[in-house]
Length: 408
Image 1 (tube, rainbow, N blue to C red):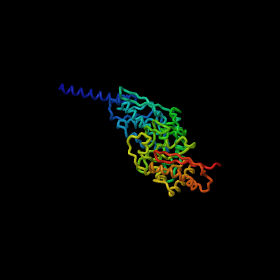
Image 2: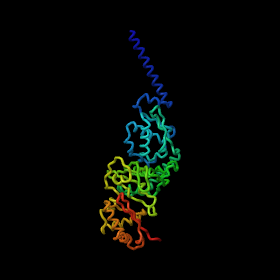
Image 3: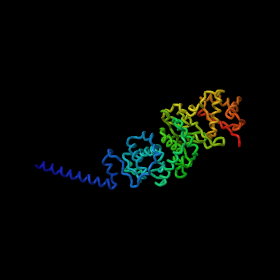
Image 4: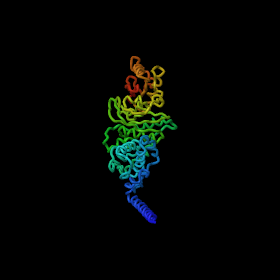
């Protein structure tokens, strides 16, 4: 009897304590203390929180695909991916903080990097600075730093949505054609700036590149990512180190998938400030291989070997050697470059030996460039035949020709 009585009394106390615990947990949840309760409940409980009081900044339908590919998200651990999703879900609400679970500071750093590289429309948030809340060595909350208030961010989102609707794209063009049109649009509307502190980092954003018209390499890369994703082309941002005659340091560029194969695209280096005293739009770094890019860029991983969608191959401007049969295509290319106001005509040779042969053929004793200019301008009313500038990009075995137009 005593055992039964003690057993019955213990069961009643347990039931009472269970009911009180549930009530206390409910009070804690609705009073905002659920963040502490989560540590006790364990990782099976989602970290998604009710949205803040203010509604989210809406994303126009024109920008719906932005950030959809999420390449860097896929490289995170499962716990990091949960934090990525929770932060991404909450940022349109401008939260003061976003609770996270089971993360170290290094984990959160990886999450933050992935979000800023994957999501070009999060330019209301600083891409360089954030704060954390911790308990011991464990991060309990991500605290973003905002560059813009809600009203200004909404205005800029709407400006971007209006702009992308104006970009001229080829009717029923291939992904390559669309990619090239987007690339040239960006380069015509943006100039390079390395003033990373100007306007609180504006040059590193898609807004800086497409609306302000001034961007660093990160701004160019963010803009290309946005434009490609909006048109259904898979792409992501690559960061590393790059060096050429004019630059040495940290750099950003894109990796793009066209017709099932990956290529590198460096829009920044295709947009030189000037060359031979004129603004130009280059395609030298358009859909190149890892072997090509590794001569000036630091690469890690990624077996990019396809040449099928390289600009010069697609446009019939890749030659094993120059001869009379190639001259008509070169002349046509010069006219196309002039008509498109690119300021330069480029073509590529198969290797270094072919490059030397082509240079001698055009500018050496044979001097065939003058005959090619005559083919391009048979009436002699558009081009000067006595003056032409040229430059060689040995990295890609590319020759650039700068035709000079008649004055008046």
